[in-house]
Image (cartoon, rainbow, N blue to C red; front, top):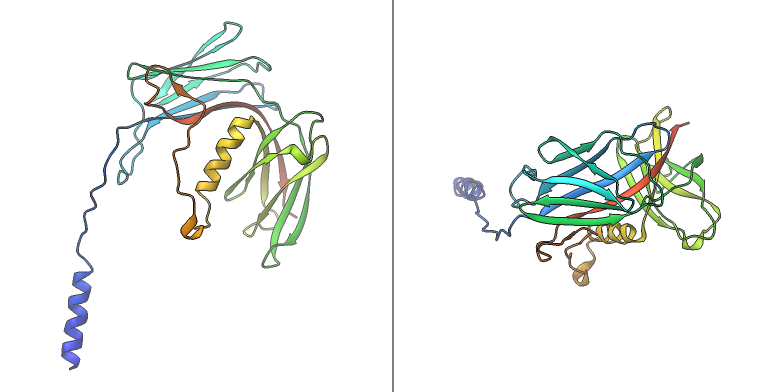
Length: 265
């Protein structure tokens, strides 16, 4: 009887090694555009980088760069900035000037099609100081409040980053805190006394806030049960003017950023 059971277990293990081929339908590759132009107010020079890739099959490990593209920006005042391709799909402008309140139009040609988007630079306030506490669900997590003064009488949207061994992101709408001193909240169970962490604030538009809100909702950890809304295609503000049906993925935005470096106590 024992020999029969052992033989059954061996056969079961071998059967688990069968390779199952999944035949997935592949759509035509789409252009993916990473175009976040960010100005650090503390730096005299701000190199800007735009990255172009294409979508790839599900089981392909590498993300293919977009080969043969051209990238440039034209302002409403007529200034033109041509980005240099420093690697396949990586375009760089070494010292892009800071031009507040001026519309910038991004233009990209790829596979004989023209992609465009228009944005203005979004300003941000300074980060003032950090308050630190110990709490959280386990009672031993570091909690941080990083304070700033929100400008009054204008609708503002922000993206915050907390950077330690990992990067945490938050988006915020100042609808209920307009003109007040307020804070962004982060907790970190892996932080230790003496760690040097960084907080960052970026100004974003309402359009990018909505874009990030949808992405965050679709990538959340909650499974939502059987009535969860199914993920949908999230489209940014970049359009294909040559062939609108062949729309790209990604977003074009421009923002000033401010940092605050903090040593965990």
